[in-house]
Length: 554
Image 1 (cartoon, rainbow, N blue to C red):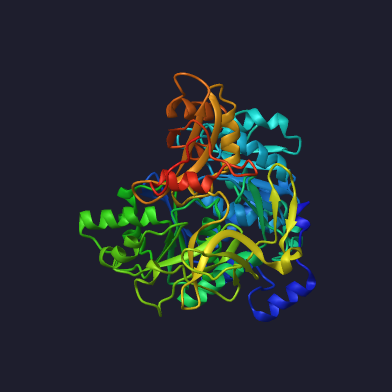
Image 2 (cartoon, rainbow, N blue to C red):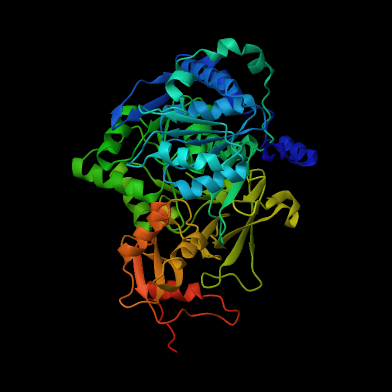
């Protein structure tokens, strides 16, 4: 069972003594604020663009206890895996903590993940319960889960949040919210203990070179990532934090769930982003700190300029992506009234590098910041490190995940047992001259869909090759007109006329492929360029797509 994964006692002792790990976890944080400031606002939900009822810390803690009792009633015990595929609703915060309350492992799943990928994830982790929404963004999640459930012998319960709940499904509202299970299972809940060292979360990403990976984190590897920022940026009970990303993704877990709890701050929970709603929302909630990919901040800047509106409460704006447009850093102060900080991190590494208040306001145009105390960085190269020849970025420390697990192969890789704990990030970087780094590119073939999670390239290529009109194909990232990265299918056709982009996307959709994995551009070639080992030269294709090189002929 993945929940049994725990660091060596020597590692625990070392990180405890240095202060980057602790003996408690988010449940202890919740209880602290429940007792000290029970009436303080903990969650500020927005649904369909409108504010919903706010939850205090006392109410938040009450829901966690009730949800934990509801899970216990469904047979969830320490070490079991509970999958959660919900949009950003306040229930996801309480449900994650309820899993921790029982010692269950949490497996958050993005709502954009479709049946094909969902089945593989649930099978790999052996989820005993899957909590989903009835439908979201035009997709029937409950039906998809019902259709694949018979092929998942470990799955005992399908829990559905929504208005349409059918036979064989557990009604989330009735079972979790309306039934006082905390009164019926007080002994079981009292006996549960919080262990911040064990593997408590498994977050799925595509990895750097093909097979998607499960990333295993403890609440201490999470703590090492957020505690440094809280201390440096002085985030506390007077702050209101907002992250528009899915709470089922690493950024949401960090800045939407655990950081507010640690600081005693309020967390804004927005179900669906829209440019029209975002700026008024930040003003209404008095948001003081926002963590988001560049595209969200660009929306805010445009809205602020159109309405000539500033955000007087906002004091911290932090963005991170594979490539951060320089103009975002330079335009943010004038539009939003606050400098733009830049950050580097990844699902495997919660202890980020980030630019600081003591650096120039435009430092983010040439740096991704310096690491906090939970992270060491190592730039490795056999040559002199220059912008033209950046180094391979390795990291280690208290904020690096415990292990990775192949989604399909099941291969478990415990990072402490590899290279003295150093982890190869797959990124290329140079020193920024001020104790930090600047990301220059990537080693492996990674495509980040508009600053979101990485696309599993091998999966997409495999499904495209199943199309009868596709002879050969390589999926490669290209720079779109707005500066972000999108996937392109470079294809050798086996039919006349060749397939269109629309036909290829329809084929992938019919195979259950997640929408944002699918290519947004199609280029036809006679043959794919390959090296002497027979591997496609994707670095050449990428440069060609970006207008920086020509393809060889013949």
